Amino acid sequence: MADDKIKEVKLLQNHNKIYEKAVKINGIYVKSYIDTGSQVNVLSTHVSKLLHLETTPSSTTLKGFSGKHLPSRGEVIFELEIDGIKSPCRAHLTDVDMGSIHLLVGQPIINSDGMALVVCDGKANLKQDVDFIHNMDVIEERTRFKVITTEKESLLPGLSIIKVNVLDNENNNDVVTTPQHYELQGVSYSIPATLLRGATGYIKVINSGTRNIEWKEGEVLTRADSCAASPPNDVQDGRM
Image 1 (cartoon, helix red, strand yellow):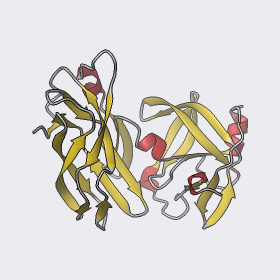
Image 2 (cartoon, helix red, strand yellow):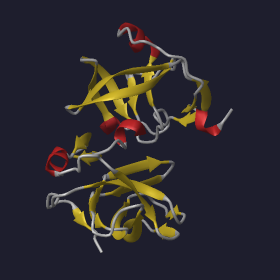
Image 3 (cartoon, helix red, strand yellow):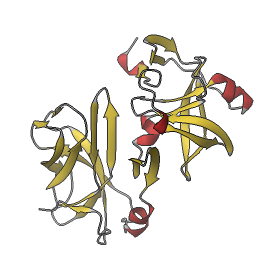
Image 4 (cartoon, helix red, strand yellow):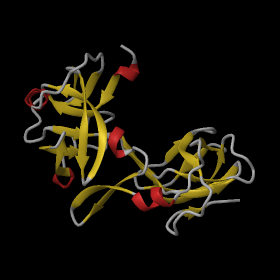
């Protein structure tokens, strides 16, 4: 079986109550868990049947339920509302008993554009930078650029500033990067929204894990959008 068909799930290995929360699936409350180590969203088959969600077949294997490899029971699509943010959500189904949890909210939601995971006062919340989105004057044809490393990087835990290339960007064009948060297998980092000009600039990377982050030259870190107006004050300025 191809590796891209095996997806990690971490809930039963690293359960922490601060990541539990009530969310809505198609307007109906269910109990969920924000699972930063899961490469997919996972929903209980029992809840899917109760909500009459349409299931499509899947060849994906879910890895990590108490160390087991279990086949996905199919995929479903629904509207997810979490912390007041509504978005389409695709989830794999499982028969595994997840206790009181019905839905694992994984990286496809946590790492989606403009989304940030914030842990404060013993609670984890997802937030979307609405003001940033509304204030950005995007060109008529929305163009996205890949932001890549210019050389091999080894980032120690903590805050680092690294040089990046913005592929195919014109010299006098300003772009703003999508904020990113990533967690998987002990690697954890965040990249704030950053204003860049032309093909080269600098971005901050916050390594919140316990080990070095290793990136090859040309690694895609995030993407950027063209903008015609200055972004809000909380956007980092990494222009050359």
